[in-house]
Length: 481
Image 1 (tube, rainbow, N blue to C red):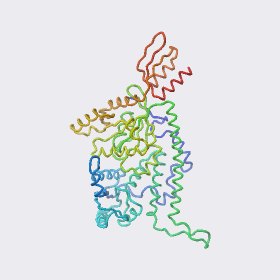
Image 2 (cartoon, one colour; image 1 turned 90 degrees about the vertical axis):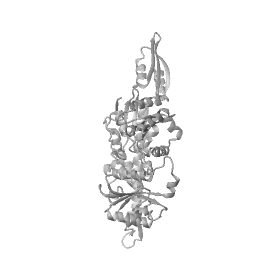
Image 3 (cartoon, rainbow, N blue to C red; image 1 turned 90 degrees about the horizontal axis):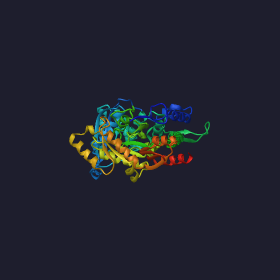
Image 4 (tube, helix red, strand yellow; image 1 turned 135 degrees about the vertical axis):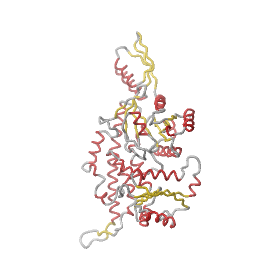
């Protein structure tokens, strides 16, 4: 196997130098300070808490909803709590207490009932908690009321995920996408950001009447920022499409790695391509997408794309903002769904990934036709479970393989499975070339898989397997020769 970076000469993956220049030109003088202007200094954008701050993590759930969702694939409240704790640890908060809170109903103003509010308030005061993370989607008024009641910062599930993405985005495109998601999220939460909502005076001198409230001014500023970010991301989307068109001219099949966050996609990507994409046992360790060319055992070249990890209840602001990046999945000839088989909620995680793929526009037919399921982390399974998963993979009707991206177990089998999946869409041609048509012969060997060759007095007889786009290109080249 061999690999190199795609689309540029920097060898770092992700964006190329051309991408950086395009986004620099689009940003103009704002540059990297685009998200740190006067509006950000007024308190909008990323949350203002320190790393290492003492934190209480809460997973609330409705008793009635839990009873309805009992069954295979349903997550236990303790597992959901462990996931939100992982999110808090990803931004280095000091978790001093965790709570699973069962609710019989929801209160419109504070989410929790009075008794629960008082009990949690006692924990917050007694342990000097500065940040409370609640594993649900809070309304703006609920968030404001909880902060007032507990006198500390409160983050909901969307807020903590946005905070992680804001910290992990490295490329200019990634920061643009995160800023758009932040601004969209903050726009609905202006109600909690200001206490001085007195009216400004409009007009000039002493004759002015009531003007805009401060909240209306801020909403207008955020709307202007959102419009600008969307225009910049439209340029990014247009440039990505130009790059896709360039790749189609030398068409290598695109293979996209998708999966739940921390399933091992980047570890597998590094093993296959000998790359150094950042890997760590934490949620959303990598954010910006990376692409490399990879030579399969047969010599066929493909483009391997490592995408951002998915998660349950992924904020719609992020799905919308990262659509330009996630569209790479739509271009893929094969989607490799990497699963963490050592995780107790692996079935529920699989269902969550399918939901996100469908939200991008992939239907069940395309998912089943193009997907390979990679059951990763088999090195963490006990012998009995390992044997069970091996049997399931062997007997599965759809392409399934059991691997360990860390140890390399099953990786060769995965590559063979990948080649078989790619070959299903290929065309087999029987070609007769004259001896002097060496360029056409070389082109076929470079862009296809030569299955058979016979040389005689009539010329060179080749049986070759080609991608559909390459088959059309060869017909055009042969017509010109």
